[in-house]
Image (cartoon, rainbow, N blue to C red; front, side, top):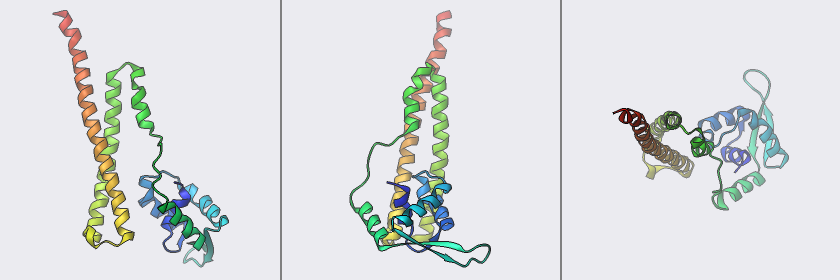
Length: 194
């Protein structure tokens, strides 16, 4: 998966780079991190590949704006990407590597602090996804009434909700285990003095 394919997917109608950046932040940016500064060079690459066209249009304020549209070749590339099968591969999950190596500190309290920080971040993410879900349900209603252009983004939001809830369940379980270890380590020296 690449930013190129995400931008092709977003271009259902002609859009400016600014509009694509905003849509990216509100959608794909929740699961595919990229900086706004990457969007314009990627649009240029897509244009060079013949997957986009770019035209200039007048702007209400300031200079003329560049408007991008998908070409037939661009749509075929998008179709190929979306139909050749899921791109499930090895992901780089830095937080799992951090947890894996926490033992190097030989300190359960440091581990507990790290997991609590993860939990706080994921609670914020879950709250955001739940807010988005409420807004989507209010705007578009029942699943059975959705068109494909609304159904699949809502399904991806469901994936995000399930992932955040699973991560938080893992945090709860791990925090409980760590609190037990920290508590038993604190009780041991006191018991030795008896």
